Image: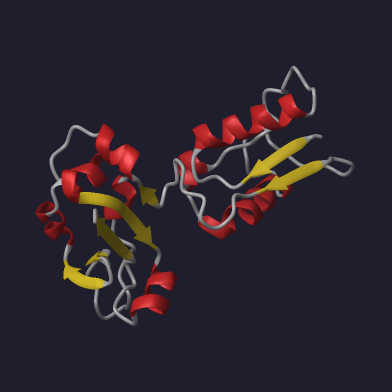
Length: 184
């Protein structure tokens, strides 16, 4: 194998997957640059991660990483429902381990990218597009309302991208949704 291209939701998880894969195959020494990473500068681009990574390497746009004729490349991605160390879910274990007081502080600490603007939605309206907060399936307003949720009451917090949020909740979610699920 010349390269291993993994979906990049979490660098630590990807390195663990690579180590396990090679261990299972009986390979003791892993080539240093066998798994190129883009998550540090492109973030988790969901389903676009692998084709983007492949294209960057094919065109020689990744420093020190290039694909040439004859290379053997393995592609891998995690499936739906995989949320251990996921960049789109803050689960109960991570919530319990945090020392902050509310949902907004936790997201600022653990997933600050969720709070960033997705840009404006039109040339006429330059307002930044931010995620909408949901409590379960009910709209709960702006990001500041995340301060209302004390950590001990939260089961899980999810980031839902704009496309999925629009499909699920209707229009008006171009910045995505931050969904808070309370403990039963």
